[in-house]
Length: 253
Image (spheres, rainbow, N blue to C red):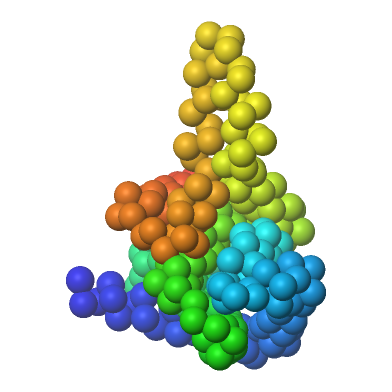
């Protein structure tokens, strides 16, 4: 157990440092913060929305949409780059298991996303300066944002393991992430619930329950239910499990 944790720490530290050895990390952080701030203050008309009630709902509502494109941009290189440069063979000759490598690379990317999210903390200070917000809802929003970023990242990790081409990995990841988010939107959910055609209707009515939208919206209101947290964590574990099987199959070839 100790050796496994040591291996995960070593690979994860190397992977995390690699983000800052190129402009990728800095470009990602700047784009995320600038776009998120612009959308919150100008597109959502934060000052009018926040007048008299000072909340960050206009801030958190953009997080899933931002993550739809920015998280796949981070995850697309995780395994595609390793396979394209054939360094995956070298990595797997080290005394580490495939599971340890997957967990380490995933956690390194998640820590990077968490660091980027933490840099938005001045928004909380600004919000508290302008009024008396419900900080419980703010904490819930950050927890939800952290979990939805991890979920998208796990999907991107799986997509990256499926192909050598980073662009293809990016497109696959965006499509799956968008699907998991939009299935829970009220208009889409109503349409799916309206389908009544035997087995097809049953499957269609089940799809909205797989969406990340409802649990994230609940967390935005400050309702952090254990079942919602478990939903996100289960999705992450399932996608990493799928990643393992994809890489194991390709390793066998």
